Image 1 (cartoon, rainbow, N blue to C red):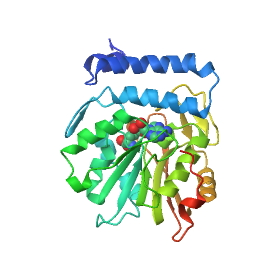
Image 2 (image 1 turned 90 degrees about the vertical axis):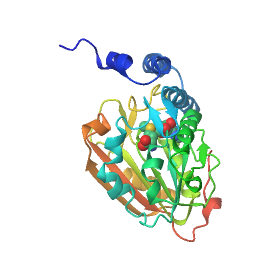
Image 3 (image 1 turned 135 degrees about the vertical axis):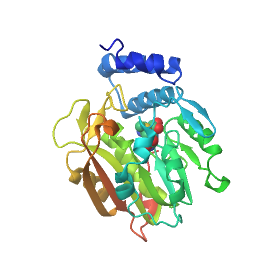
Image 4 (image 1 turned 45 degrees about the vertical axis):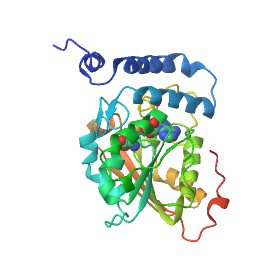
Length: 295
Ligand SMILES: C[S@@+](CC[C@H](N)C(=O)[O-])C[C@H]1O[C@@H](n2cnc3c(N)ncnc32)[C@H](O)[C@@H]1O
């Protein structure tokens, strides 16, 4: 017989700090009930996201080389770090000689920056939560060589913040964009990622896929600014690869490739499938001046 619910077990035995954990439960309860009824704009949505991720990030105990009790990044770091589809589809075009500089959108406490450090000259990170960036800085400080320490950029949630333009060989994002259920915000992020890439630079990202309806998700084109909750509690479902392709083409990306794959339930919660996307900024484009950046 189970005496404790999953949430109660997590509370008693989880390694995270309890106050932020409780605060997040309250924020989510409020967002799902009252918050959802209030009029909202994209700005309100991003404020809600920031509040949720700042709170979640403050639950972890972080020291150089260790993040204990994390509730922001992947629920099981080892499982995600070893998942072969990331290598096959996110790193598909990345050369083996660690010659590229990369930028991760939604880097959290730096799980991917650490895991893929051998594949890059350096990986920088962007995140909506300053606490996440601080956690990443502390965590990676003792692990990475000085020349590999990431430059970390805070964003308002719809662009790459002060990350340089025309600078990166590669931009990527995993288990982040699927949590942003406002199409106009994601479009703005993709435009900024285009701007931050060098001509010829490559973009790769993952989102969640479901051709049919799915609880706690909205269809791709929706601007669900009154979601009230985030990070798995209200996500977006890609229903067809053409939806993403249309956005990427409108921004100016070429060489688009998409791949829908089954994903283990332990990695993805409600979604049974993910979609991996690769695209390229054409060499010799008019660059930043052509992109209307909305940061
Ligand atoms: C589930 S975590 C994944 C972290 C990391 N990508 C990984 O794979 O471990 C989602 C991350 O995206 C960030 N994030 C969510 N919405 C964002 C937005 N609108 N702009 C920038 N970062 C965002 C969160 O703060 C969080 O760090």
